[in-house]
Length: 316
Image 1 (cartoon, rainbow, N blue to C red):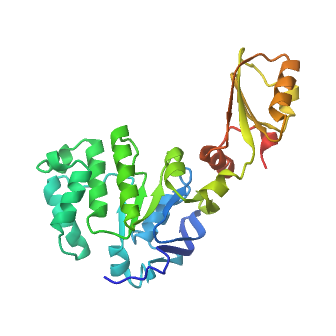
Image 2 (cartoon, rainbow, N blue to C red):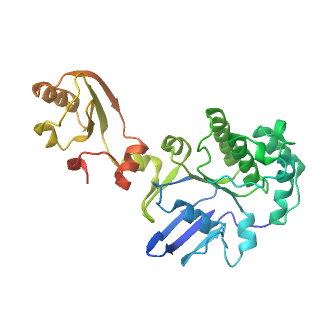
């Protein structure tokens, strides 16, 4: 099956979909280059799953277009769908097939021949060997997810879409999954990942798009995105809980967030930490512990989507 490696692995152009008065996806445009591990993030209801459904042809867009390695997913649907493998967030299985039967026949849905060697590789790498004779309905939740990964990969897609692949799975599966994803990515498979585990996206993805209420609010390289907030974060653990925020702190624009036991400040420049601690001491606050860190993806995500517990004065 020929395809053009010079074309974008995925090109979404002004994609739109409404459900009644709600714009699930609103004028979305982005490109993913061949070989990327690309993160698509957003809170619940941001439009990620609707976008994935339009990429795979499950949902028909009302505006815009989608192409996979240069093939339009509507006008050249058969080729485009063969190039995509998707592991959906919801567990979707045929309860009456055994694991062996389901993996073997699934490649036929794409009109492709079975490859016993590749099938054996997937079974071995995903730890499905001891469960091949079991009906799918008898598998644990974690094993069902392992099967769904195998099903998504059985036809050797060039673009693999993982929609919340580690939701509700154990640490062992999570670690082995990411090792496998890195391996197949190293062999040329492009990966589109959605996840609510932002530390996973931060470790795995080179570029990240963030959606909110159907619209794209950020699309940048990971390091550029992490540098959006600038500076460092000073987390102060208080010796005595705060019942209310003192007036001096309420007016302090460097205060990013607070709870009764912690204060988080943005600090930048020489002497900023010492000056901050001096002001806290003058205000009569006793400090139990200090921690310094750089802004992480979660903090950027919360700011861009408006879901953070931030001090209003610190908001842009």
